[in-house]
Image 1: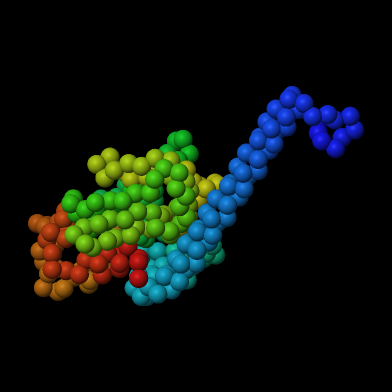
Image 2: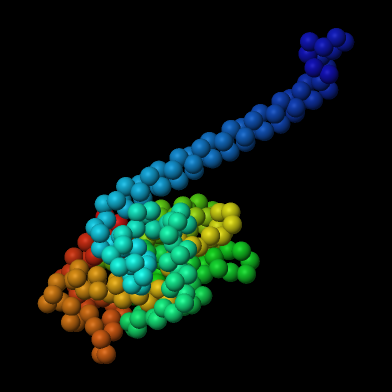
Amino acid sequence: MFPGVSGFEWSVAHVIFLGAFFTVLVVILASLTAAAIRYLRAWRERRAAAIRWHAEFEELPPAERLCRHALTGTAPGRLCERGFDCRTCAEHPAFAAREAQGLVAVPNGIDHSPDRFYHRGHAWVEPQADGTVLVGMDELAERLAGPAATVELPPPGAVLDTHSIAWQVQREGAVARVLAPIAGRVEETGSREQGWLLRIRPEGKLDLRHLLHGPEVAAWFQSELERLQGLLAPAAVGPTLADGGLLVDDLPTAQPEADWDHIYSAMFLRP
């Protein structure tokens, strides 16, 4: 019984009961309030990330906004207008169907796996049997960073949105900020030595249509290699190639005089 109810009388038992009742009530209300605040903060941050990516994408030069189907030759010169999100593009399915009928991979010396999906910011996604995905840096990104680079990863529990900053790579003062290829919650962190950096639980049903896959990946890497050579000083291009015309494993060491802040910004789509 509570105060104000007919027949209520104060006693030690009533004091203990009411104290426990209101303590539990306060804890519940405080928990709900904290959860609501966390939700609103996360919503605002993710909304801000989406707005920021849209603005930054518009600032990219045309050469960095080429449609994935322009890279394969299916739609020459076509620029992407959707922030590399093919899931909202009405023309993408038709282009993809044409390419599936006979696209030939372009050899370029950059290793890539047929089991992985590639983001234009040089991160890859590999679906796992438990519903999570592994995420890491692709081969070109690894060579851009070099073995001496340090990687700063988000902690488990962090929520990432597509195109938000997933992790940072630092090398002798230069910083590369790598974009998240998918949205989801970080369940586990790995390392470069393990071959992957993040294990992510995707948000909702896994949809990878906005990522590069299959033979088109080789065409994209070929385009990225050409773009990288354009970013390096003409006199410095030669030393970046090992015997046989392949990129060296440690580009910053091969070209210490290059403007790596600028190169990282361009290659990782950070204007």
